[in-house]
Length: 220
Ligand SMILES: [Cu+2]
Image (tube, rainbow, N blue to C red; front, top):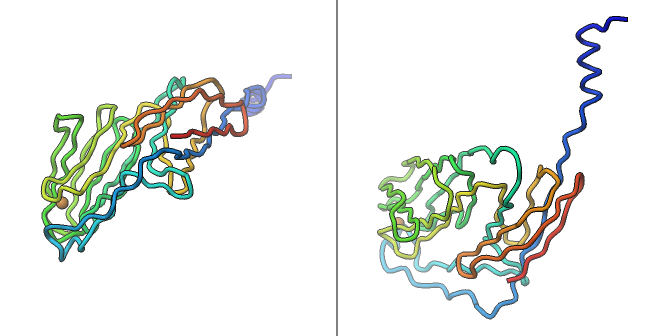
């Protein structure tokens, strides 16, 4: 009996294997001797910035470490699609402090402060970009076309610092609870590379199952 195109399509769909994808989730713990740095007094623009700023370079809650970038290396298939990321400036702090964005993403930068900020991106000692925002509500955009770490500083307020990991693989950043999750990974054996601004890099081998989740724990 000849098949109609619709019946043929349904038969093909039934024969196609379901797309398999697993999820990786984990926790980053902190067992090291380093301690958070104390708050520091603000030396200028106190009306807009406040009297003091807390240090965000080492955030530990109950032994769990925030702001760790985790990236899965060696995943086959297309790289993660570019997205639109955001970097805000509120009371002379960058927010978020750490983020991971795929190569080719666009960073949308905004300020709600009535003071001049520069949004100065550094790759090591080289300037990657430098945007000036002088008015509340002002916006600027920056494309992130190269993989690697970018530190963002403000040339006016030396305490302001943020990090952008421009990544080639699936990635996430740990929250205040030290946890992260990366979904839709094809099954396989990969390397998970973790990076923290003060504590450096750790790598761990991970195995993503055909369905379900793999759990991993990292300790600094
Ligand atoms: Cu500033």
